[in-house]
Image (tube, rainbow over the protein chains, first blue to last red):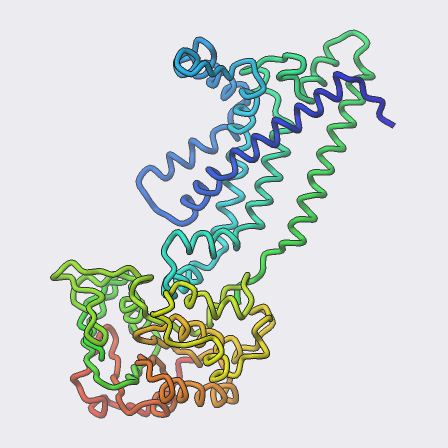
Length: 230
Length: 229
């Protein structure tokens, strides 16, 4: 069926690697922030909420450019990291992970927040009267009951990372084998004379991936259908 | 047994409660929406009173003057809710053992087997709470609270969501808990016959005001039909 070239397979695997790292690394902070936004009132909550959601409404090139200014090899934090730790994220796949995380984070936080909101806080109170400290209440009641929403957020974040284009190309460029993910490979093919066949193959591949992610999330949510509180 | 004197603010509503009782079971009688639930939440530590003190069987749980305020998980106050509030993601067995597992071996005064036998819930252990009837849920909720070896059991309208036939089925279990386990209880209800079944020590509630030094018989019409449901 799809007769993929070596470069195309490399782009596919790189996309999957970057999306997987991005989802895994975003998950714990997204759970904590989603939970905090759902359960607590505090000064600056609207500001935090707004900051997290900014990448959702900005043109993706803006977060990408800001990342470059901050973490590029001449950036404020980037130069310091490079000098003291020898870490450089600019123009590497690690930077692409970071760009994906920034773009997918609001979607994951929203999913977690929504699902924590649906948990009856009286269940958490019941656990407290039974001798569970706040940490145990979180891990034994809140987290398992929010699990379907967290998984939905993971799938959403993973899909968003697979599709990430603007922030990635701005921050880490379009380097074959390092930062050229599927969307960037499609873009490259469309810019080449006679690249239409390649672009078409990659487009079909992207659609198959997206469909697989959707089917996976549908299956998961059916399996973990939120059990109604009694 | 109970030595409580607190002032609680809930929104624009203030509750003053003076509750002194040496009885094993104390009944709290009054219509809904007069602060009964607020009082229970204050005793359990889920809401902080503005001022006052709460002591159960000689142990001070809250005292604004001395700056004592134990968090709910250290109070050992069992809470039985009107709608049971079983954890939907755990089996009946794991619901029952939730509080039990937080205790050290020396703190455990009851075994799972004993509680299961008294409440006759052995056949339900591996079920999910979704598959229980209302009366079964209430018994499991009671068992879950008992297994946390509480120093006091708060029962907040535990029978209000059950029909008459189920009420008659649960009440004998409450009697057995009282007589066989000797755990102090504060039983809140708007149905006087329920309370009378368990105790003669009854305190009436006026809107925003509870005082156990006023004899219950001096309230206007203690046998008024409970018309708020």
